[in-house]
Image (cartoon, rainbow, N blue to C red; front, side, top):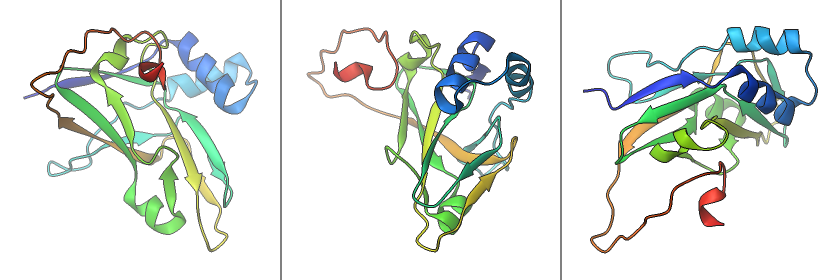
Length: 169
């Protein structure tokens, strides 16, 4: 019973995200990163989470944050949400955490102006001074699909157009 499908965003949208996260990157390098994007997958049949892989090497010093443009989007049925968490091993070793604690990817985010490009903001909150290095292609976060309900008097009719933070404007 599939309820969702991961896809890559367009190269243009990915390049825009890379620039936002890392600054100017030569187009050839950006194309290499784009070509190396892996779609999320579960490690085992019993895994709830789909592993997300970083498209580029990322170093996060203690107390610092990075924004990772995954190059991914997800089409899912209404009534479902994708929740993003850091991989548990990285959380344990570096106190790696999402800046917004849990990423919430709504089903209508797929239709946003940025093509539903999933960004993951991470902070290394290590109290031991450990630097976190994640190599391109390594899993760094996991996404779990969860059904959700609405109240009996729900009257939401608005349509999403923007990305992060756009639904409260």
